[in-house]
Length: 442
Image (tube, rainbow, N blue to C red):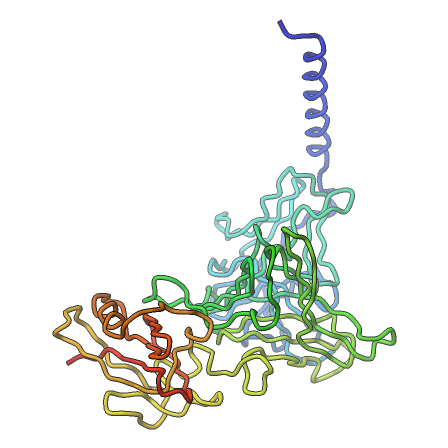
């Protein structure tokens, strides 16, 4: 038989749960604050990123506005646009709800009394939603930071766009362990689906990866290990921040503020600076796999945008353009951030955008061979260790037995081996012991 004490405790918990449920269920969006916006009517007149057509919606907080936009006919994305008409500068897309799952003409964006924000096609098919029905939401806002939020009666965010980035981080936005921990590039200006590049926050570093259809796993082509080192603990979050260098604010830094756990501490890394308040800035993982910081000055007309830092650049303090996997197309040799030659079985030929390796269509070892290049590295080599202690013959055997292997790279000093499932950009290096062996049909 249960004791009176346990019965009282159970009753109290049931009453508390009921009261909490009642409080949440009673928290509804006032009818006057609900809305339904329909994707219809004339397109906007101003120039926007990707040369898109767009329809601006009422939610606005200078310089951010919610819009429907498309780059191919009748395939619309719900997005936040950054920039104003007054600046007469290109307006850019800094957050997207439904990349890769476009809606059509007459689609609706609805915010109901239950607190759920729903993007649906005209036939009712839901393309995207916040999943916040009956969770205490009482209001919707686009904040001046570019964060679109659904909040409860106390102002707490039940949902926020800052927690679901696509290829862009605004100032104040983070990558988080256990949450949105990566950015993914856009496929092309016309095609709004996920591209092959990603920026990933890992326990010890930020890392850039290239995903090839032929490769079993994404290939690392850049790491933040030279910026900051996480000797102990693991990265918990990295936030893009802006702060003045002096009290007078003559110089503003764009900075990564990062926090670790086990042990807990925080630090920062300054990336770029501007001679004006740069809190209206963003970090973008571009279609080409490069990272760039842009800042927006609302007080300037015509040239309100400034590119303040390109991470992989010929003038960069960090890394040159030869680290970009597709800098030299399908198969090219890069030197000092320039494409200088096309590797062929007969040696190097003049650079052309049409450079490509000859396709090996058979998996039989008797149907293909290898040709050798000296003094070159693959883009994945600089930030990966490869297989150590390997003989060159073992490295070749591994590639030969792997039908998807397109070639292998071998450092005779250190006996290190890298198997390449995609070639793309090779970099010329001064060390002749860095060798490449490229598969070619017989």
